[in-house]
Amino acid sequence: MTCCEGWTSCNGFSLLILILLGVVINCIPLGISLVEADSTSQNPISCYEWWFPGIIGAGLMAIPATTMSLAARKRACCNNKTGMFLSSLFSVITVIGAVYCMLVSLQALLEGPLICNTQANSTVTCEFSLKNLSKFDPESFNLLWFFNGTCVSPTDFKNPTINNMVSNWKIPNSNSEEDRHRIFHFSVFMSLLLVGILELLFGLSQILIGFLGCLCGVSQRRSQIV
Image 1 (cartoon, rainbow, N blue to C red):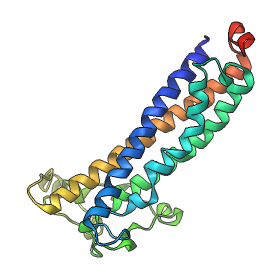
Image 2 (cartoon, one colour; image 1 turned 90 degrees about the horizontal axis):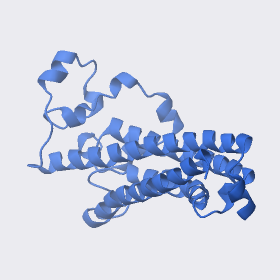
Image 3 (spheres, one colour; image 1 turned 90 degrees about the vertical axis):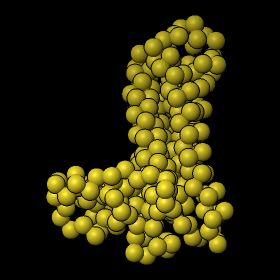
């Protein structure tokens, strides 16, 4: 097995773990919303999970590349130049899905849970579109709704200073329902953001390795087997 095949196989197992993590993390708030809310369109904590960043972005869109990568270990289609090229091609889909997962997670972290917005328990605050992302301001991504002593919408702070942020810095605990919602929202979408980042890195690396496999070829013994 060449280094290209070995890395492809390692990528397959890593992506498989990330797929399972993304799906499970995305399903947790979905299950809670069905239990606690009166209908599937409302959620006392959030509603960005209904954009399925973990199920579609980090899950379904990463399956083709994962399947091709795992095939390298079983002496299958990734052990020839065509297979390596296809693994790179499918990894592009993985990258797109990972970026989608990251963008939804960033938007959810920027907005905070519904309890921190004026339109509580409304899906209006959970609109996700490229237009909203085009207005994204890195300076507004301060997570004050999580690190502040009270649950505050990001729009309630016009120009927060460093001194104000440090003086009000407080990690929420689970003593109140508001704090539990903040912790849960932060944990879910921060985890999905990390899953998306890792899938992006693995996807980009597989694109590079796949093209190297096309140029340099795979092991002669494996090619004869295939």
